[in-house]
Image 1 (cartoon, rainbow, N blue to C red):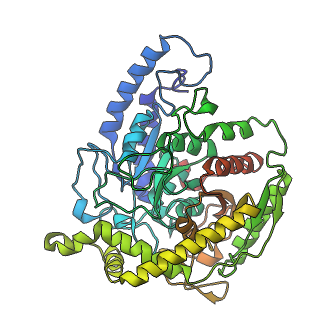
Image 2: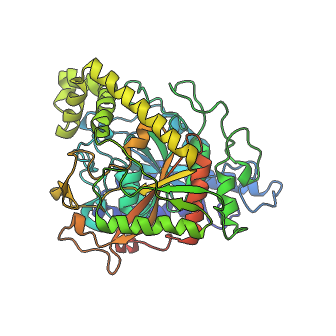
Image 3: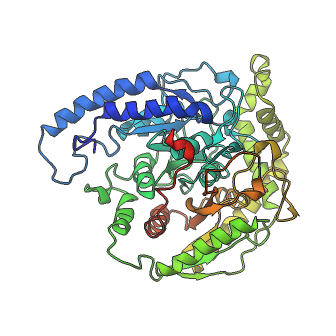
Amino acid sequence: MVARGEISPVDLVEVYLARIERIDPQLGAFITVAAEQAREQAKKAEAQVATARRGPSTGSGRAGPHLPPLFGVPVSLKDVEATRGIRTTLGSRIFADTVPDFDSVVAERVRASGAIIIGKTNTPEIAIHLETVTDNEVRGPCRNPWDISRTTGGSSGGAAAALAAGLCALAVGSDGGGSIRIPAAFCGVFGMKPSQGRVPRARGLGKADPNQFAQSGPMSNCVLDSALLLQALAGPHPLDPQPYLERAPSLRGRGSGGGSSGPDFVGPVREVMDGASSRPLARLRVAWSPDLGHAAVDTEVTKACGDAARKFEGLGALVEEPEVKFSPELSDNFWNVFGANAYLQYGHLLDDPAKAGLIGSSARSALERGRGIPGHVYARSLRAVNELRLYIDGLLEKFDLLLTPTTAIPAFDPRHRPQRIAGREIHSITGFYPFTFPFNMTHHPAATVPCGFVSGAAGSSKGDLSPGVGLPVGLQVIGRRGDDAGVLRVCAAFEAAHPWLGMRPAVAGG
């Protein structure tokens, strides 16, 4: 629409800024709204559109050769990405007044895609909260648009809330144990953790991250938008310790009408959307696991996700329920590695008397926990990580995909964090998200698609639900390592058959 002159980038930015001003005081989705910078960029974009439209027509109806694919589109970034000229807080009082003079690699690529950064979304301090909720001492809690007494989860909670409430067109989150997928599932939007190393992570406010589990990734209200954003974000970078790709994907992608020197995430999604086949997943073998062999899961969530898994058969897939057995000890192995790495990145803040007193209790607990992990424990947990990776690789030699619930319960009241699910005691940290963190450990691409609604009894509170709807539930789709395009294609097929775009929380009406 921007490229065809149907809507002005200036008008588009103003629409979103007005919605943020009207709706976000109820939600706390943004830590910083970059109104001045967004308006300035929109004016420049409008001038570029006018110049480009006077040039030769591409005849494609999409952005021409002089306009990048997300040109003029308002995008939010999680406030862990350093942004040149825009306040970057990491949800921490230590960085509350920090305005970097540089971009992280992710922010740099968002700008290169032509998108306009409209603001920085809420996150727990340094993206770590042992309760896995989005809250901090800079902005306060982020509330779920479907029921503002409930949490968005964490740590990309602000991004998910902003999308669900229509406060931005696209969002960039990050996921070290489920931090994209948990909030996306709780808020009824699409979110994807790419294959490890697919999106480079470098140039932040902390020290260099070993980048073993965490990935930045796209969040959106439809699969195609995330494919477009991943196309812009993906590709190697010399500062990233684990570059996944030898070649970067084209910003335009084959599916957008241009050539590609690397993976194409957009084309497979467009092919499914074109509807050439009524059975787009024919011959695909799909494994469904309701509990990974050990997890406690709310009965309503199990039913909603099981029903969704069976819908893949109508798309041509062969769905089976093989025995999948994960060890409950994975939670501790995950936190041993994650916690030690977090200390490596931000532990120096504990040793600085001027900064240590500004660290909130949850971040402090996580860093102190990481500092106390002995080397032999860390090494043993790394061995468990490798064993799990080989186990999932073996499973995905027999199957093309693995489906699970995304979370064990719907969004809950953060004042009453669940201690038991379906009558069973759960792990104190990972109990409500037993399905997400293992695939950070294994490096496989994993996405969550909205698949239904439940009453929310498992996370009950006194808040009112959106009338007649309930709380969203997400289905997790896991693919083979490196097959991000395949995961996006499958999610697009499910979306086309069972669309969710029209479902919006009442607060979105603003």
